[in-house]
Length: 221
Ligand code: C5P
Image (cartoon, rainbow, N blue to C red; front, top):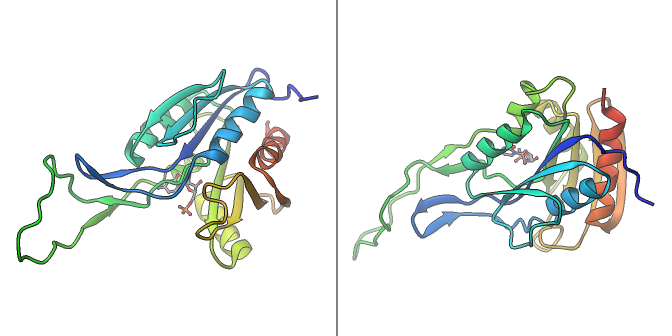
């Protein structure tokens, strides 16, 4: 029996991985499959929420009953998330957002010049959407959740990140080349700004999603 504890709530979930365009045919990207974000969207819908899924470059099918907003880059993801967040009760940033983007977008395909060394690639910082949302909540009492993929010192790095981003909850998981990205299962610790620590054993991404929604529901004002 699924609880309808998100009935009457609007939740926003970002999923997938951004692509930062270099020219019309090339981008800088990452290995995020979107599975965790899609699982969060599906479980929220099953618990009665109205769900906006801001989906960055995932190959997954649109979940039934979910409002899907497709985006490519971090800048587009920011616009879509901020727009949807205006009346949201909770925002969960599960997308892998590129920290940097190419400083210049070449409107025509970049050519190699024969014999010449390649030009160094200049990057600029992308906006940190999670930190921005957490700092200026578009709606009072809104719960903001982040994800952190760490390769080492998972808990210590997670605590530092939670404090820096000022979100309410941070889902921290350990990643490697085959771990987490693209996998059906996940293992994580959910850190709370109140000092709480909720370990989630290795299991389906839906189970982790339900734990996240349980913790969000507990924090609603
Ligand atoms: O700092 P780091 O990239 O590890 O933080 C991960 C968390 O921050 C994720 O929830 C991700 O969606 C979010 N993020 C963001 N904007 C960025 C970078 C990350 O919202 N530019």
